[in-house]
Image (cartoon, one colour):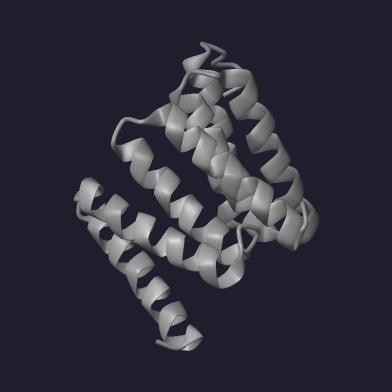
Length: 155
């Protein structure tokens, strides 16, 4: 198969994994993501945006499987790749770092969660002058962390 065919297959595996994830078939989704991950690593190298996107998807599935520590490690990997490939001021990096914030909050690592949310919020506000849904979503995440901490005045 040509490199183009392999790239299309990797994309198809990723999309199939996302569908399976949305339908709660997390074990099957993870298998598709693992296949896609191996293919994109071979096609583009370990430090590519394609690998980061698959890692981001894998992190969400690991979370759904209750494997939070593994999910955090996978999301950190995705963040590191996006930081190197797109820069720490990209919208994708903001999104990935906020995903990491949600994972830290799930693990009750509230200081780390707040730091990630604030980092993402700062990027979004620099990149977009107008208030937007992404900013609102991040603020909700920050509010949830404050609520979990019992800091209702801050929430």
